[in-house]
Length: 479
Image (cartoon, rainbow, N blue to C red; front, side):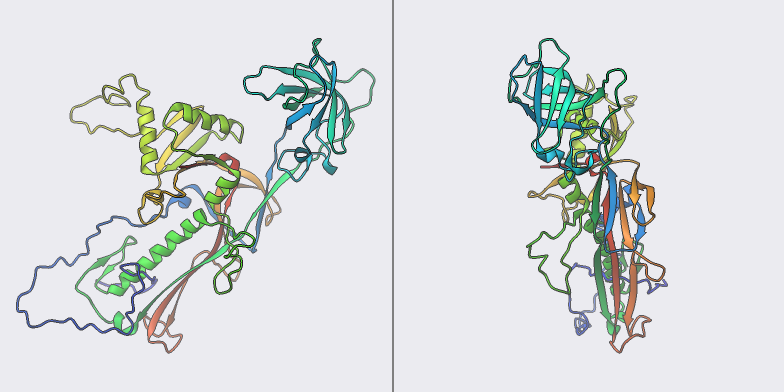
């Protein structure tokens, strides 16, 4: 069988560094006249061993020209202030409410804010004030009569209700604007609001790998016929190691984007010297854990748990369709939860669209469900693989919910708004250099003629970062 030596990639059968270039095979034994029966074909005992697929399913790849990728995401359209307090007693007809300074600061990711650190509330606007105490039903409607935009930021209101302020003094309350009211023949609204964007950024990291085999080992044929997940076959053992290196590198291209974290100021990684990198990057798990939604303390195993998830989604982008990439246990938990909704679930297996044919293989799994939103589930091999995240205790992650579709952001390169998938990869590229996936061969063996080294060295390189847009729409399920 003809084997194409290129493209070549570094894979070692045991995933260990083994010194082969200077070793000679010495175990030829001609003293035994009997030959054993042998299976030449290598048995694939672990099936498909690769874990990459997640980003290919939910994202896209596009070029970038810089060491820094920045994008802007929309803030909230409306404004609510929380933990506001008033010194006025219950039944007061007018009151002055103090807004926490941190919520007025334009640097805080709140919503549209006037410039200069002013609050978004203006004279003439009508507001609703609600007691934040658990179980409370107290609230008021009021009109704003005065605003102070110097710290401490305050708004003075006159209540519409005859009974005056419903809350006692110093009660933490929420205030949001629902409209305005002006008398006849008066001037218009004083002051305007300026939209506030939320600016995020990420940096690409350089990912490398290499494989080296001596010219002598390339000329040595083996009796075991090898095979790899990318279709490589033959009796030259170095081809297996070469192909497996490529498969491992391709897995790392995805897992690095999922797991990467930025190097914290003062950390050991930040102080590391070349040749290793020292800045890190913001991977999907880090971003969602930092500014997304997190479910902790086990999986949601009942509809009440998913109701909490749905209620949180209502407060975020309310994306209609979502895909949950989960490990095996989380997948079983969802199946069991949905099966339990059938009235016969406890005493039989009649749930689902089945005819109960005695010769039919019973399907005990579900691919998705709808409850307010559409949820689809997919097993994520990366979370099940025992050599990766499968079986972890510390820092275990059971699933990631990704919104389907795309979102609109301002693209710094294009200089205009553009549709982008919520999750996508940016790789470094220009007219003369494409660093999405580079591979090249050096040495003097395997067709290479670049040096006097009696070996073939296959090099791999990529420079990329993942952009997680609208992280507030993602959900991370962790123990």
